Amino acid sequence: MDIIGWDIGGAHLKAARLEKGHIVNVVQTPSPLWLGLTELDRAFVEAKAALGSADCNAITMTGELSDAFPDRATGVAALAEIALRELAPQASLFYAGALGLVTPDQVAGSAETIASANWHASAALAARTCADALFVDMGSTTTDIIPIRDGKIATRGYSDAERMAYGELVYAGVVRSFLMAGLRLVPFGGRWVTLMNEWFANASDVYRILGQLPEDADQMQTADGQPKTVEASLARLARQIGYDAQHVSASALTQLAQFFAEAQLREVSDGAFLVLSRCDLGSEAPVIGAGVGRFVIRKLAERLKRGYVDFDEMIPVLPDLRKRAGDCVPACAVALIAQAELS
Picture 1 (tube, rainbow, N blue to C red):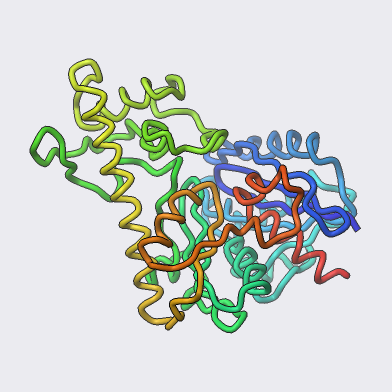
Picture 2: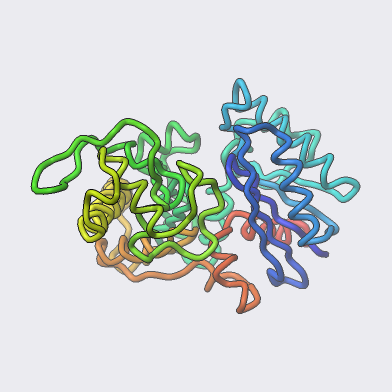
């Protein structure tokens, strides 16, 4: 049975095609739901053109959080309706956390467990391979920090609010995070400078300046609509502290970018230390890295003095697709979970 796993986010639609037990294609396309639900229709059209159809579709989501909806239950229902329409006539199932995959007629009654459950799909699959680990998925916007003990997910929270309270969900990503969010002062020119409370630059600008941003990671429009070049990113970063780029040196701005990267790593590290402070994971338990921010997670593993494993090394995927699969883990995970449940 051929299966396509879908991860419907608020900013991207990700999908992975599974054939004969292996991931054979992975796609990601922008789908900014805040611009309207027609963005998701367009994204499905693009993804289907690349992936084709399959015997079964397995769907997880986080897009119900979008302010396009008055509440999460409405969002779950709306996204499910769009997915069913776009993927018809093939069968579709929805991932509902510990409940596993549910049928379309069960969506309304399972909305609370379907909502933002993509992290659970990824961690559940990781737990089948590694009995004890710290699973960390850092994407464009958020980071999931999930302890795995004795082959089971060992989180304290399930909803976004609960997971944020326990350090299991950190709003830190390597593309869309606003630089003025979370920090008030930054070091520049030998003094602490106040950040302008405006969207002038993103985390993608920081990692682009540092030469660390993975290729094709940034699929969103820049803050000022200007190109995605180092020079343009330096200009955006300068504007964040009230300067024009030509009035400050590139080296000074690069050092400022290093500070932003360090601050984000500290934020993720704080969440990891909070999680580890109560789950008693032995030092031999590795960090499993997933998401486009895996280059940051490797640094996190070093700080935690733990081994590091890329999630894409743990799943059956064609070699030339490993990087893309690692960027789109929930889509891959829900497809592999569906295979296991339906076989």
